[in-house]
Image 1 (tube, rainbow, N blue to C red):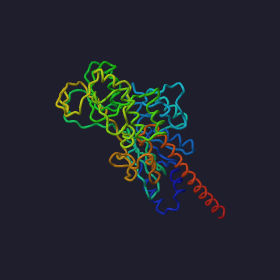
Image 2 (cartoon, rainbow, N blue to C red):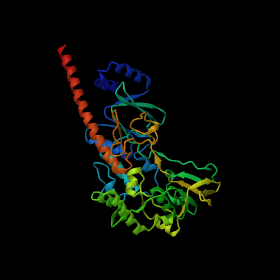
Image 3 (tube, one colour):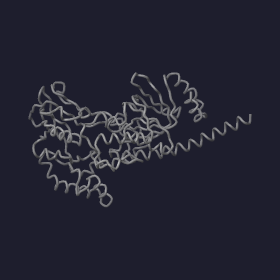
Image 4 (cartoon, rainbow, N blue to C red):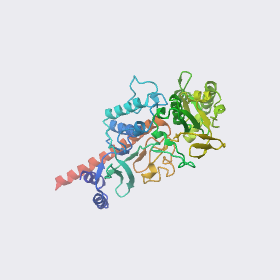
Length: 433
């Protein structure tokens, strides 16, 4: 097999290697040696890393459990979704957005951009391959990645480097609520929500007041539904734009000149002048400023795109935390009870890394994130890397992808020298016989 000759050339000095590989090849139904890294996940993080590697002459293989790139964006987002940040902050490395795109591209425009990105760099993921296990084999000095196809066929990939690109949004978070089995209406996560059109005229309770929850409420309003919003915690609501520019862009510029504390104070003053006191409408602000809170906890402020105006007018009702669900109603912690036809859970997503990566040093088993905080969480031991776990969106993804590609390229060049020296040694020996 090709993969055996490839690895034998790298590991000929290891007396246990051939015996170990023979055991592996006899027990696996299919096995493939990947000369470059295996990347798990074909979302923006995986695509960016593959493109950066290709630009440096390093091949890679992407394994994707779905049947398309960017499956979260294509299959699990609502129709009215747009990028919440200006496009210049959401570009992947080596390729910008088309000049004709608006400041805040739509969901379909972003998907079109990603598909064009994959075509430009000739990135062809292996679709419908779910990684069930990845583990470093210290005897081989390689990673062994097992995937399962749609018909249950297993495939093992042997690689020197493993890039975890499944990201922060791999699995929907479903909260447990008393009485969920009793509620007779529709309960669904936002990953299954497409449009408010199917809820026209219905009383809908949206749980979660992040960017998704706020925007789903606005969408429901625009389709003549009657939404209420459960606000379980404090939240920073900022205007999407202030002083004629994007709030995010302005924040990044101010941080070049002023300390974070002063920038936070500025953002809150301008937000109060533009939006008023949000606490009056049930949206109390945290004690920490929006940027400080983001840095410490990863919690993103809400960038208002019109929802707050609907709340002020009473089109969207703000409700406290849920105590329990009844057959047709919801009881809140303040003792009130209201009837609802449906519940939308805007409760976010989580990492699924602990379910398949057999490694306990780089990634936390508790939340599936790198243990080391940004900007140092991208590299682990034994050729393990992480991209898309920075809690800093696509900007953080691009930074990770560039670093990873540069690091692997250095290793790639060094190993290429060793392979060349090994080959020359074999040629010299054969010629002397």
